[in-house]
Length: 187
Image (cartoon, rainbow, N blue to C red):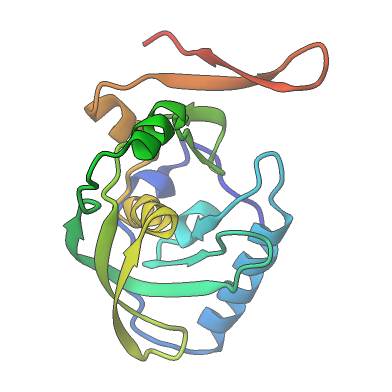
């Protein structure tokens, strides 16, 4: 499958709920998994149906190449929450100073990156590939991925969140040594 690129119209429209859990959905999920597994430069961690040209409320997540594939159909974020406050200690203050900014990217926006403030945790209701309903809490990186993919199902790209939060967008480029560098995009 080919990953569609912005400004493809399917990326800016609300996806339709999945009503029938049949072999067509199973086939679509299988093809999306192959597409996600072969996505390089950048490597993908999530893929929503609109990104492969299908206006359906489903996405898959694979945090690392060795992680299990997770399937989310008709997802709904029920609740969001921040990380619990940590009592400052000399070690945590040192760690906070060292913490680098995490840039968010998207397979449908090649070479574009930005800082998005996402909630630390979410409570999500969704269905799996068989239609079985689930209600689960996710925290950390996987919660960030799920929020990004849920945005796709609503017709939003992460760049909208970057601009809403008045953050900076960046373009990745290769320097003379072949290393990736990030340069600001004039807004």
